[in-house]
Image (cartoon, rainbow, N blue to C red):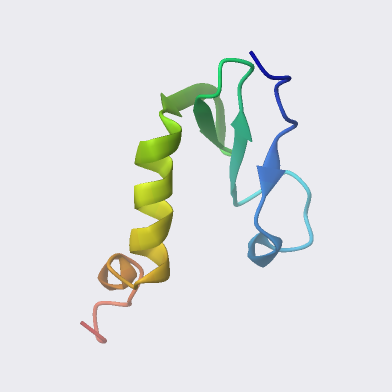
Length: 73
């Protein structure tokens, strides 16, 4: 078992330390947890493999259509 990490957020989330962002951390068992700053009581856990696949999809632009404005897509 490893030590859990502290919550991290993307530097793209803005200057406010706790608003408008998703935080992630690794648990002591190695799982990845995600929490939305607007609903901190709702923690989602997933495996490292699933999180890695999601990050690869984000990097590849597979989810870009979800953040485009309606006039763009």
